[in-house]
Image (tube, rainbow, N blue to C red; front, top):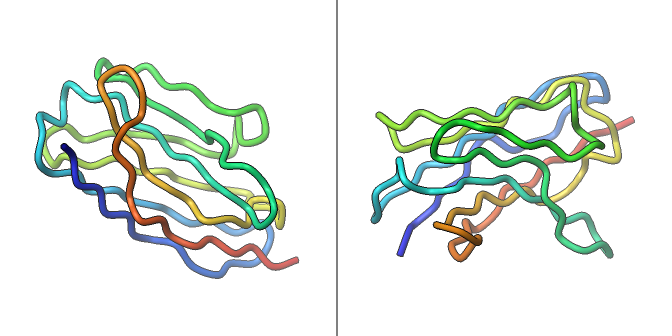
Amino acid sequence: QVQLVESGGGLVQAGGSLRLSCAASGRTFSSLLMGWFRQAPGKEREIVASITNSGVSYYANSVKGRFTISRDNARDTIDLQMNSLKPEDTAVYYCAAGRISYDNWGQGTQVTVSS
């Protein structure tokens, strides 16, 4: 089991930036697949970005070129740097972890982008 705690959400104007962080504990972090998901009101949860234990990253088309995912295996953390934010990025952002699939989730952090 992995415990995940997100931080860094908030309110920002369109075009601004935010950095989300996720701290993990309870399992060997370096072996985990890590990801960021988001869920907007009335919509299904969707993947935003992921990073494998070897550092290979994936991005949803909607955030490619604007968001950057990174991991620090020494600190057991992942970050999501979000630039050029748009109102449609408004959602609750969740950190997730697992070996093959995501079976551990954080409590979520709200990101609101005003126009």
